[in-house]
Image (cartoon, rainbow, N blue to C red):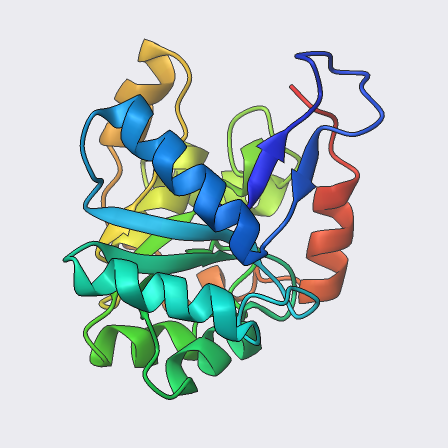
Length: 221
């Protein structure tokens, strides 16, 4: 909950999405979710919680999420931006936190959430990795020759190396593919934990602020 698509399916739209984490949005979107699915989902996430989001400070929203969690729905949040780890730690530390799931960006270029993600796993949270191929940058069409070279040496495609590295993290329960074609799905599904030395993989990591700045400049596809 908390996001609305407003781009009219136009790649050149001035605004594609609108974020609103107020209780009024939750009260409107939860019934819409039930109507769309015909049943309650197992997991329900507050989308893209960042330091400027009121989601972790709004007592009305948190009360609503606690009520939802009490019905058996696993309530969680997704994170974005260079402060993902700090946001996750805040959610973990909330008194009576309603959250028990997190979906965070983690990939070979952006590993800054890694210290907080094991803490979520240790607390019994469901941990989901998104953007494992860095929005296409860690694929054959990407802009990371060093990653491509490591993948070739490891006998994998670049996307498989990236997803395999995510799958190898002991705290990762689910790693999302993001494939949009059968060919991409087949390549992603072939991922396995890399045999590449950990230090070589770690050397691919970028400064988080620089990574997210570059991500914001990617064209909509």
